[in-house]
Length: 268
Figure 1 (cartoon, rainbow, N blue to C red):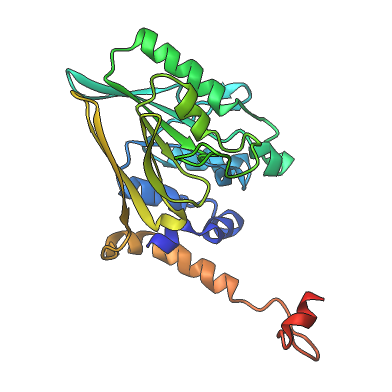
Figure 2 (spheres, one colour):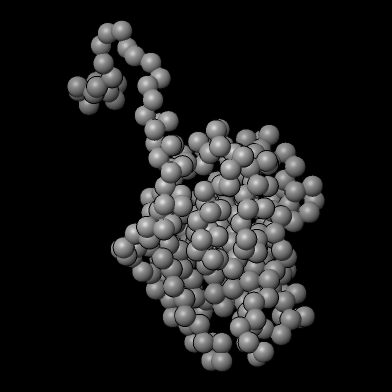
């Protein structure tokens, strides 16, 4: 199941041939009964019609506040989750503003993306001034651009990833959930509990948070449990149709082959 959820080709096939059906990831999120979700850069790969359908099909609250369409936010500004009468947290969702660097112009011609750091900073300040919550959690489709211990850059500082800047420079964040870099870590950065699981659901980030004491623990759990057959049956048929489509021959060589017989010749 973890492989099924992580692969882009099922979405590609869905957009080509089955876009009138419910998007397979929406089926999975609804089955898992998520309360909140956040957009990522790959959700924009198929154009506005598919992302609209995806957003409409998912039952959970969309957090993404810094992505706009025709000037209106695609998700909520922030969400307040009440556990009981005296315990609540605020959730802020943002996606990397680097999307226009990669995405086809026609897919995002009506979209704008606010700087994720600026959006989070402004929203944290607003929440602290107006809301009665015990903590603030940032859900960020982006990652840490600096080493978690030394604060040395681990990549070119293009603005694609800003999680370290958020943890180090925004006062009031208690938890930051990251995802984008295909890196895996669970740590504290400047007192902020932060976690990023690997790609393709290879592991799961878990944060336990005592809202009375603000004590937090953060860890990664390996995805080594038994397959949920009910979920597999829910999304498996479309995955199989995508695999069958991928296996169809596109053509045949009249002579020769495409095998690599000499790796040095291949490099040349």
